[in-house]
Image 1 (cartoon, rainbow, N blue to C red):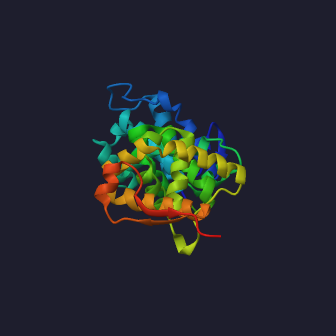
Image 2 (cartoon, rainbow, N blue to C red):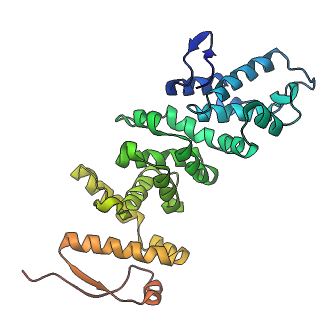
Length: 291
């Protein structure tokens, strides 16, 4: 569980999830973290000793405050707070905490998005789900989005997932949504939500029907946004990038729309013709059933 934490003179129980934000905030503002050591002396000066104490309080509670630990490890590494007892950061992580430098590096790469999600106020009770559900596994799967598109893009994606899946979101869901996120949608809230809905709709988990919007008005808005998002240019780019995944996704979408509209469709088996047309798979017939 870790040792008791003392933040600004107020003791707190070890390892409680709601202390993770306090632990991280105690290290300072995210854009003002120390990036180098303050002095060249082998002995830490008073401000460094104070910072090391706060960092080690966060790392002690690694299991339930992984992002505070990651933030703390970054400070210890960049400000070389380990130098009082250890020659390198790698020695510090292995001997002081018995964690590998590789894992320490992953925690450092993960903490920013985890902190952003824990401090987000999306409303509708979503922040409660985040604080209870978000763990290292889910946060780690968001790192590729963070490193390519920024923290906010990753926040939009995870919040879109829990908006539909709630507390049942798994690391596998996050990984799949990240892989399915169109590049042009990253960083745009509405486009990200549409992409996540499309991804979740493509899943057939336990034979359950695809996730749909509970509110009919919201469903209309989602369809309108999807119509703008998945235009001919976007589909053409998707086909050029990954035709093997794009073709079945398009076919599934067309079949769903056709079934909802009472239209019968059948498909050719000529992917070359499809790609040449830069559009959805061609139909051999499309007719309204006789009434």
